[in-house]
Length: 164
Image (cartoon, rainbow, N blue to C red; front, side, top):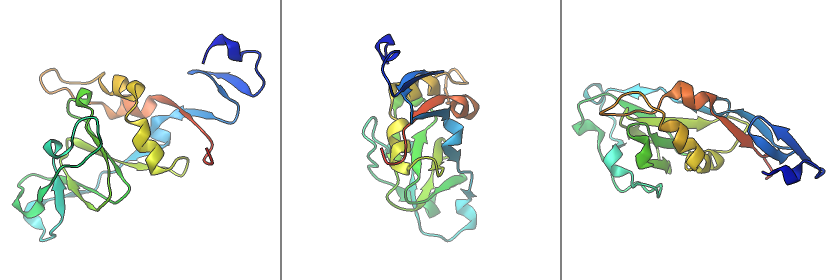
């Protein structure tokens, strides 16, 4: 927001700029937790869908398919319905999805769960923003760049009241 808000009632200056007084600013790690539950396909008989990075369409949030978990060999992350997925490998590709089912996914995908401060749909919209992607692109690794959770957890975001 611009300087024109300085004299407007109902606005306040924050670390990230001018915003409505009822909004808050906090680190992304305060509104999202990184789910760390894993599953070893070699040690389970669960027949659940497994989403790999190639199954997430760039920039749309669409999951285009999945594979059978039992046919996989490497450890996977578990996700639940209403979790949010974000491809941490090459984050500039903008691979994200809102989960409409329970399943497993590549460990190159973050499984995010919203905290009580925000709803899961807000979290999904937030990870699509240019600001989020810019911070996610400040990565570790050169040939295989990966988003860094510590950097993302500290990323300051504007949080509107729940009713908004």
